[in-house]
Length: 264
Image (cartoon, rainbow, N blue to C red; front, side, top):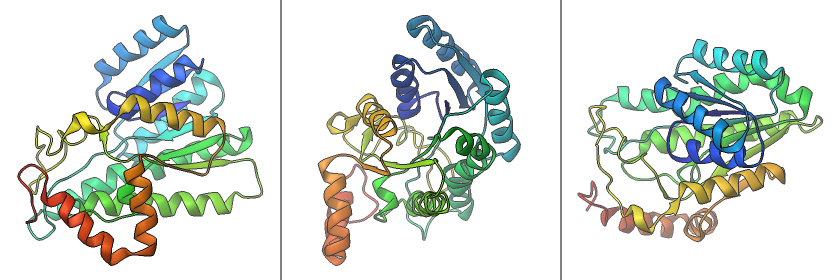
């Protein structure tokens, strides 16, 4: 199994949850030293085999190398989890367009590259390709234009991929957590492309990364097509279909309450 963005947050939680279930893992992330420590800990704690591969998913060659290492080590790929992602927090009118490009390079193109190279193995083995998307992939969020755009794109890609492969054994899962307590808001990019270094929301009230990982693994085992987490997330998706103008107002109110709000 391959997990991108495995050095922290949901990716790290997924590594532990899958290892707990006996899966051998190939972990991809940019922080190689940290990744090696995680791989060692997983092997020691769960008795599985874990391989760390330095990988910047915005680089096609890195993604190909990640997949090649998985095949070289384990001779097969059964699950690819496209988890690597970054966020942002800035109004579109203020930001440097390079920020949007960086979001698309990581959140969208990273999944495209990894899936492209892993796909023959996944089809052959009747495996699963998973996209860790977001409620922001169903509902545009203010101050997150690049993030929402990248997740909408990911959702569209995964849906198309699923239909293309209806006649074979490939399983395609789009997993959409709601707000999750992780490092993603601390590392979110501002209008100049620099990391904020702090969260703008109440992390303690959010679903934990471990809870998300547990639900994603269950969905993989059950070969679900879509996973939408939290009552708030499910409500947002359904109400957005029924009453989109009303949801516009509710989303505005919600984000107007965040720390140092961008909209008022």
